Length: 277
Image (tube, rainbow, N blue to C red; front, side):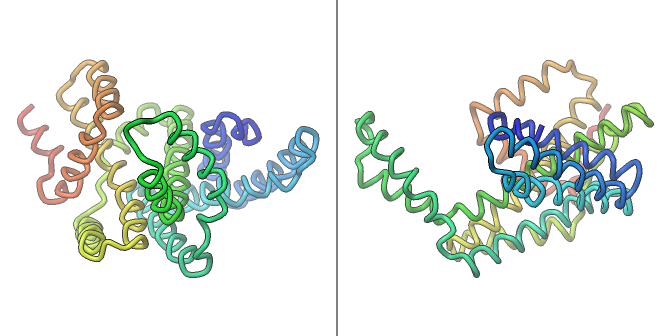
């Protein structure tokens, strides 16, 4: 599944979810053994297909190890919120390390982006080459934040999928209750608001990248509240599909939900909805 992820990226999340499931059910040592065996298998596949077994190491470092760590924390604490908070802290630390030690991180993709910019400039009449170049420079500067937040998002999805599998095997409906009741707490919300305010005031690439990681965390919290609201009000599942579809075409809706999730520790939206129901 990991090698298939080169062509179909979600397959990588499924491979990491398998590590999550083994770790949650059998413990951290079994999860690490499974990761090591998967690394050998992926290296063999990569050698046979691409003659590049080192590709497997990339999956181990970027997909499987973060998933194993998140699953280990969840198994020990039995707290989805705490697991995601630790994962967010690691992602923020990764952003700071990349900007500090690898300031030219984004430059490795400049050649590829240059080709895309030239094609867009030739095909588009709305944007000039100078405007596209300016956007390209911003994307290159922001790539560490995009890299960290994307890996964090994928690890979260792997953690959710592995936890869902565990619930399907041992506790039917348990994952839905756990996810819908997830609350990151007041302290985390205050830290998140402070980070976002600093990003707005300072407006540097580093603070923007850190803020993007925080937004991914509270985006998950927003989805948790949305799922809970649908369940509490006993609405048809099509409402959930419609909301996801709306967010796809109108991303601003997700930003509104993130604001609600930041205020949720004080508003207690779910409890209010239950009281009205």
